Length: 422
Ligand code: EPU
Image (cartoon, rainbow, N blue to C red):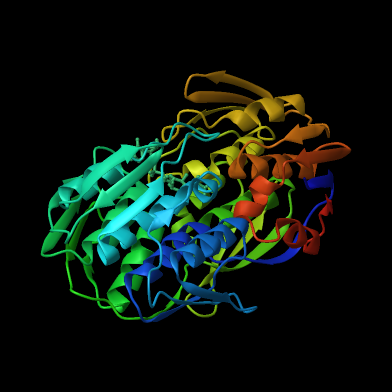
């Protein structure tokens, strides 16, 4: 298992290119199942969750080729299997995103039920309830969820709770259903909007994505398209925090500042300087300038456009270096503070009280061997390691490799002393 070895204390300087969004690329890859025509996806991040999805799609019969320029060429001319097996789903919950497209295209799908994971129980009951509303009969047996429908019928679906992949799954199913589907209390995340745009380019009729009410008029078939994946807002936020904590000047290119607004606002509230300038091809350029004396600022994780749960761990690392006490409230997942105890082992002063973490800064952090429990927790430990005294070894780097493209190369290119131990 690879590890990362980080020597703390070096300021960073330079430019980092932000990759395409993993969480937008995953549903876009699944959407290729909806048509027999070729689909080209550009700006695909080369991370392990994407490679897992490639494996899954190949098992289903999709011809998938990745090019070195971050594009993927896909063609689901014929679906040869409609089953997502346990060994793939257990490594990546987002495999459940093939359920909607498979059901819509073939009338049948069998997907292993994802179990809980390091950040919470993460059931898929709202996905299942939605498919049933569209007329599918769904049963869960032997650890699999199996959905059957001769033809899906449009319906009104009210999500009990906002769910990102649930909204995406139902949107992909409804696009080929008979009649109109209205999704209420839908997720407003940019990744949902990106998927809706792709489906519309394929001939779908999806309206309202980005608001809590999405209307889908079913069509009888979809055609191929070329679609560019949006920039990764969580990777951008992670590098903003890395710049802030190291009191550095970092320029992020190829990102979308609007998608990162909640993080920018929160960092500015804490006293970090961030400039936004237009960049080429509708992207923005963000410059973060750290400050010696940034201050504690409370945060509550929320659905978009609120502060993303996927930025909570990185923000906690930053708050260990802020002056004062901050309260970080995690509202989305019930068990997403696993990084706190590792940060404490490095010297942080953090108290967990239910869904709140109370962080008192500024504390000196010292390098240690730490274990990451999930993707964003790992990013938080790498960020803490950048300013810790001495050497930090971050174990179980496979979590990071699931969602950050070449994070150590990007950090090294701006001056961090970081290396991968094989
Ligand atoms: N939930 C249910 N039942 C459902 C679906 C969700 O109870 O059927 C609950 C979840 O347990 C959670 C809340 O609803 O408490 C929200 O979960 P959601 O369904 O929105 O999460 P997700 O779609 O499984 C996506 C991202 C996550 C991100 C969350 C929240 C992808 C592939 N994953 O997960 O990303 O944290 O939305 O924004 O889009 C990551 O990239 O590190 C990551 C975990």
